[in-house]
Image (tube, rainbow, N blue to C red):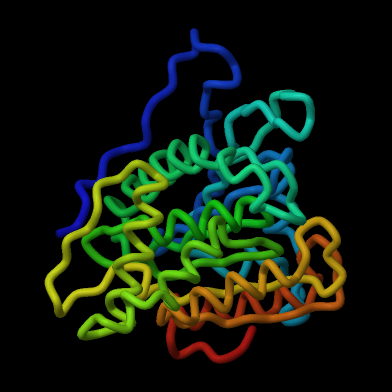
Length: 297
């Protein structure tokens, strides 16, 4: 049964600044609204810095930036609320969840729980609002760096009336990847009548438990929604903030769980490669929005 989707929680302006979810940056479509894309910024950034630069990133074809390729898409760029960062003497910064070291996200594994729970509820609300306008199957989520990590976690724990259209991830990682990988390799998986289906449900429920969501109890012929959501993951070979091995690990785990994952590597550091990655991203998105599309043109 699908979760009951509720709007994003509202925030009282009288509360402390670090408890408030800022209003998202919304870039409306220039044509009839057919799809919505929700993209999360990296740790310490915000929507105002991330969104316009990404939409303005040039592509090799047509001489237009990324955003201009999608006149029917509403782009939504949320800003993470302020959270105290243990790695920075508990200084409040914009982050979707706390993490001690981006190069080794398993260190202080207790830190991400509260943020992942609250961020999941918040993004679920954004998805619900857009689903009322265009349908869940016309909504894409994703992000850069920690935004990618948060989006992957949301994808795993989200279960709606239909799967999301896609997920875009750049220079990111998969939170609790080791635990999720064990779901595909544990002995109990191979004792199941359908090992992969069992692993998929276990992975979804592990993510839902982390996000304090009730477990799914699905019929034997049904799998969690994330299985039917295609994923694009791009990563820079020279990324020193989030090593490429972590992005590759995310790819491997999601592939092992039966997901359709397109993995691309770029001669870049901790950022998206222009125009190469932007071109690949545009083509990948156009194929989902309009399956007849096979190129940038």
